[in-house]
Length: 314
Image 1 (cartoon, rainbow, N blue to C red):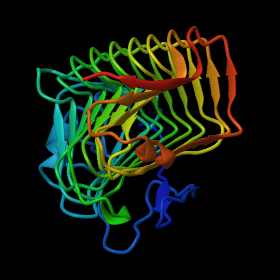
Image 2 (cartoon, helix red, strand yellow):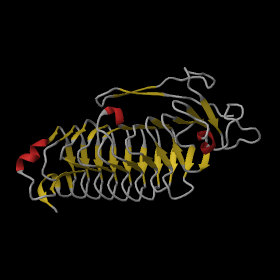
Image 3 (cartoon, one colour):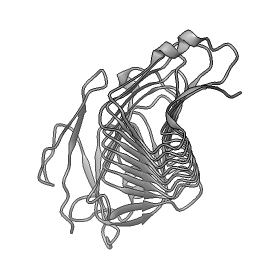
Image 4 (cartoon, rainbow, N blue to C red):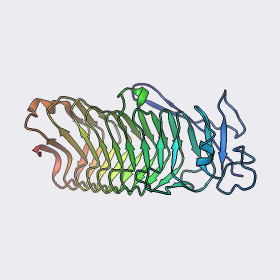
């Protein structure tokens, strides 16, 4: 039987995150939390205990309730799963604990207050689908080969209570965007978004976002696409935008004010501009662009230059 480890993930309100890792013995029980175990090599009696784990994640999910945990051994699980309210899934090893979609629906669907930690997610309509109004944490996951978006995030309130946190993950080879987020709060830290057939990350108008220490590279569209209108987007330090097919960062405006602050990031070898300003409406006044600030960034070998003039594209 494989040895499992579990992790505690804590978010600090206001966009700052702390990942605190505590190693716990597999037999530990915390409060009223129930722990279930899954191993694809299981046979005979299967009751979800560490001695008699379930063979599939789907079977374990039939028995959980809010705040329960499922610990999954290394193996390939050919199934599509829906994680119910407040349930946490922990894989044994990011590269060796694999959920491989069995049909064209999302490989993993996440409900409110759910966590997915240390898995590889393959295929599916979307690799991970975060449901409307749901807070979710995606930690140390590889998401690849989705038929549409690698991670598709539905809308929610823009407060931290409903944020989606993507930490230390690798999002690649999606047939659309690596990450697409409707209006909400989204936090992405220490993540690589690469080789997707559209944009690396596309964030809808009116969103709040904290984007820190990530790499967006080799995406066919722009590395990152955002909108000024009613948004508050901080592209903080140590992000790298490299070798994307369009812009490093594409900033769109439709006429309303907002904030996009890009700082201490690198823009290298993008096919158009490092940062592009795109007016999508005739009502976009010049003052709207005061909401876009960029400081202490470095640029090299972007084919059309560093910061574009305002481009009128409708």
